[in-house]
Image 1: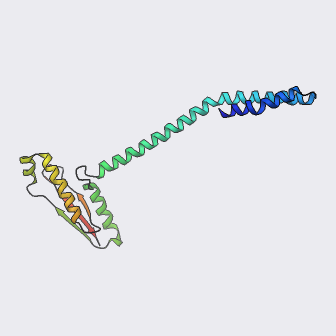
Image 2: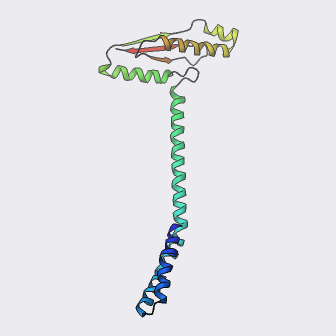
Image 3: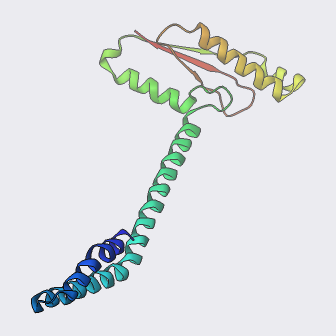
Length: 171
C-alpha cells in the first residue's frame, strides 16, 4: 500500500540522518521517528486486510444492486409489455386508462377495440408463426395510423383465438 511507501521513504531517511547526528537530542528524535514508523506500519498491516475486504464487499454490493435494478426493469417490462408486438399489454392498458379517467385535465377519453375476426382460422390453417407475424403486422399498421397522442395496446384475451387491440385517445 501507498502508506507503507510513505513510511519507508518519508520517515527512514530522517531517522538515519538524526541517528548519525552528533547531538543526543537528534538521536532521541531518530528513535522517536523509528517508533512512530514501526507503529504506523504495524497499524497499516493489521487493518489493510479488513479495509480490502470492506472495499470488495462494497463493490459486490454495488454489482448486486445494479443486477437487482436490471431484474426489476425486466420484470416490469415482462409484466406490462406484450412480447410479440412490443405494445403495452392489457394490464398496462387498464392502468393507463384508469389514470386518464382519474385525471381531470385529460378531457374527453375515447376508447376503441379492434378484433381480428377469423384469426383462429389463420392460426389453425397457416400455423402460429404466421398468426404471430400477422398480429405484429397489424400492430405496426395500427401504430402507424393512430392519431397523435393515442395510445395503442394489445389487450388480448387469455385464449389463443382472440387477437384484440385497444386504442385510447384523450383530448
